[in-house]
Length: 110
Length: 242
Image (cartoon, rainbow over all chains, first blue to last red; front, side, top):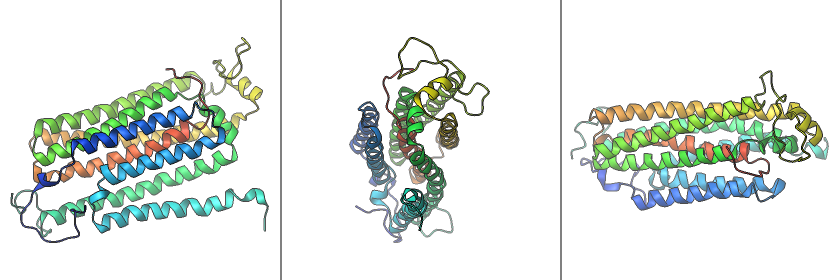
């Protein structure tokens, strides 16, 4: 639910109205810790080169949880979403262009 | 509570507009931070792709137990920051101060473990610019023939390149040091907040100062969630030990 709404003038302030509940805070923490333990456990499982994909999947899930719940994207206005998604978008460009070169060099030149 | 009292600056129409501007300002800063770290992660990805076997070999020697403890410390410190926001909104000064202090102490604990790890890396000859790089005799996790070898000899036996190991360790030190610097700045910000809470300056209508600081802290935490597997879990591990 969005309650850091796009601007609409308010006269009365209720800072205590939208606090994060302890259950949500602790549940996210528990999932993050389980993810970290899982990540370390996988490094003992002998997955070889494939392990990196599992590690990154777990880290991405952890990142999404942190951003959505703890960094309050869950209830952020559209400008904040735009800023967060812009960072993600430019990260994709930053990785996609150089990697499209380095990861395909073994195929030979043009 | 009237929004125009206390916390509201004159150039904002109301307190929610002001809070939105403060959050947006921090998010914009965080976007630049994400791209800053992105460049380093990209360089690491390229070299890891090129030298996967060498990176896996040396990563398996890093102290994954300390990395795990540090991960737990950072995640828990982020959790206490969440409780700090809650207590700031509820106007509970003492629990707010306790949560802020707990976050700062856990951040300092992280740096303490990191210092221990750096010292261990030096004694094991893993610091790329030190004169003892690769020259120390350390247990070999893969060969158990009873003879003790230096790291250089072990790498030669395993067919990995000392120069590529040096490259990985440079990434390791640069990435963890930059992350550590961010953490130290975060600890400083939290301690400033603690001081303001102690003086009674963080009232419920000013809770957003805690929230904005927590955004930065969570980002530093989230970056570690990627650094940890990329650096410490790039190769297989065989045991957990200090």
